[in-house]
Amino acid sequence: MAGISRPRGTDDLLPEPLARMARVLDAGLEVASGFGYRQVETPIFEATELFVRGVGDSTDVVTREMYTFADRGGRSLTLRPEGTAPVVRAFWESDLRQAPLPVRLSYAGAMFRYDRPGKGRYRQFHQFGVEAIGDSEPELDAEVIAVAWRWLQGLGVEGISLQLNSIGDQECRPAYRQALLDYFEPLASQLPALDRERLRRNPLRVLDSKELAASGLLEGAPRTVDHLCSSCREAFERVRLALTAYGIPFQMNHRLVRGLDYYVRTAFEVWHEQLQGAQNSLFGGGRYDGLSELLGYPPAPGVGFAAGLERVAMLAPTVPAGPPPALAVLSAPPADPGAAIAAADRVRRRGIQVLCDAGGRSLRAKLSWAERAGVRGVLILGESELERRTVTARLLADRTQVELPLRALEEAVPAWLEGAKAVGEGTR
Ligand code: AMP
Image 1: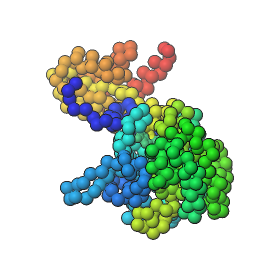
Image 2: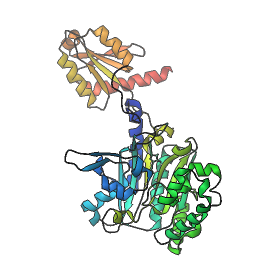
Image 3: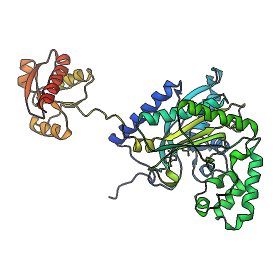
Image 4: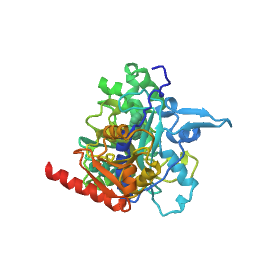
């Protein structure tokens, strides 16, 4: 077809997959709400500076993946690639900062990254996340993980593993960084160009290099946990104890460093066995105690996670099914179409899903359309029905029909559907 296509790396969310994703998200919001997290929504675009400072100018996201544009006023804006920096900005720009700390917030929405599109990797995708801001207690790190874990458990997602690491803080990271440089510098000639560049800009990032993992050069690399200062070591121990109290198993992953600069101490991802390579994480997160200052605000420690909704929806087996269309209300011309419109409205008020066709086509055409639309039954309003002040109610499965009084439609239709269900069950 020669028509205009959607941009590469984007998807149209069609009714079924969209309804599925919405139910997956609803389940997440409900779990988060049970832990006291309240939903916020931030703008889809922000000042570019927010991400350059907050995410870090040496990260892939900032150097290669942002959708940045100048608006008509000449401001540099960026479609948000992630939700944490915007939520922390919103925390400072609102009354939320007056609330008792930590402030527990959740968010959901579209994120944009100019990445190479593939299975489970898009340029526009959706994340659900939570942030707990204003508290540095390690038990909160475990709580955030528990929100995500309980959500996946509730959706029946199996084959997941929690990957856990501590990447230290401003106090212990410089020495660790140096240890990494000391280890890799003699090997520099064997490193791919991209990793030499990473080593120069942000040495921790070489730890999650796929090329290096394949080469075996990472095997002997120094581990963050062996370089933690005493406060980071104690904090990490408390995170692990709290996870045990939640009954959440974890795997130590010494190469887990996360792509974004603002993380300190706890870093985690949840992997799924069916997701491959770089797309294997369902969600990731960690503690970001330095982020607030990077954005130009007073200090405010925080911890959070972000999950890819497309990936979770893809792997969730027990997403409850949405309701199928239940009824079609059809006018039979030349009867007054207004009577069908009013009847459909009254039935909908009882919470029943109703498709209405009050147009000028023949009843025959409408009936054949209703069959194809997959409704359980039809309500027909023709001239003879209107004269008798009734509607004809027909079940499509066995074509049995009854007349229902128009006056008491709100009660008669649910009772008829209920009776039809009982009969249907009896004959099965
Ligand atoms: P990140 O913000 O990079 O830690 O990503 C958190 C989660 O968002 C990942 O675990 C994925 O589930 C999801 N995600 C990240 N990037 C993409 C993408 N390009 N397409 C789809 N999902 C993504």
